[in-house]
Image 1 (cartoon, one colour):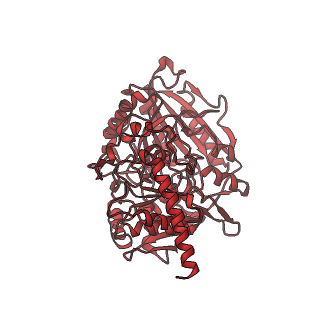
Image 2: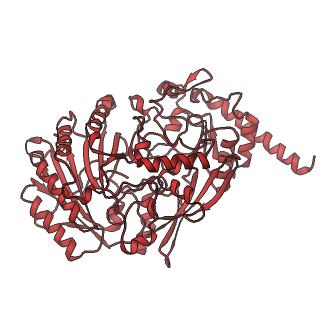
Length: 584
């Protein structure tokens, strides 16, 4: 053997020794069921994989449930309901360079392990945590680059919305990004992407021009490639709307749009007894208002606003102008004021049509979306295509069903929000429009959710969301895959039109025949029969007891846990901002 071979063997031995020591130190807190098996990678194979990485500390194994749960930014790892018992991967890789990602995917393929990328961990159902598989934590991939000539920006998938906004607002342009500064641009855009400019410009996934991805075919070889509508039309289509089921996205290049210096915004709080009239007017307004106007209506229960007469339920009517001020936008705010002001018991702009806020502050407001210590449960749906273009797009039965559910809430914290979904772009915006797997255009985006602080009430709050969701189910045709809990068996399939889901299944069979990446029919683990490995039932893991076995469950070289908290509607603080706009 040559010197190079001896050097490699020496490196492997050293890594193996350190791996074994770390395993012995934290093994008592390992997730049940994710131990080494005859069919899984042995210690030597794990050590060899570790040696391939740019930093041996990039690979974590034998960690506690709490360590895994901290990868989900929902603040729910210590909640009481079983829905918050998340899947637990066998390995977590935090890559520093692209080669680390390729190596991690190859390692998973070699050993038949499910593999999934994690952007910022804001999907509450834990879809980035494959059971006994490999999670690739993309937090170190946060670069961005704007081509000021073409207006195209390339962003890595670990970048957060707030960071992207802060880098680009000074350039006067932004891509379609989420409403919450802590949400990552990766998962957001690759599963539709509905943000502030959804109605004005369109869904984020439709403006992606190319993707830098790692995929695995029938030969089980991990390959990095750039895909476009021309080079890989089917794979490119599927990645934009169902991305996590087809590979790992490293970065994408997308269109940006000019943004105004300021945003105009107006809010009116109206008692629930006027909700039918308000929502019927809202449908007419949404169908005719300029596309840059983003209207919303949120139903809130008794006790949620101390200023409501009698403390009862109410409806929050709101509008934002995300484009330039024109005679048409001024007329829209005047129309809103003419209707809402006489009916409202309070508003955010007394005597004025609106207030204004600079775009950067508006987009990066720290208190807007998240309560980082609360629990959240949510579902989001779409009505039929074209309904938001119809002045009668909200049926009276649907309106009454929403009102009945919010009145029936025993809590002050739930909300039901109506927003117009994405438009099909016209004019110059259409230049960069490439239809994706997401397709609920010109419909209503219906958010049903709750955010609360008392762990003992988990089941009650969750039951309200489930009951309200079931009551509204006859009135919607699909789900928003970025904001469902995957507790209903068809949650995944209903996130796409039937013909599109059939196409996605065909593409999945061709490009991921070994189903290495996320199941296209993903279901929350608590809905499935528990997986039994090595005598441990993973899905019924008594995580609180397991983590209590050692106060310091984190491995010595563990990375800092992700920020915890719920990406969810929360009482908006500041001028005019109450609960109203869901995080996306």
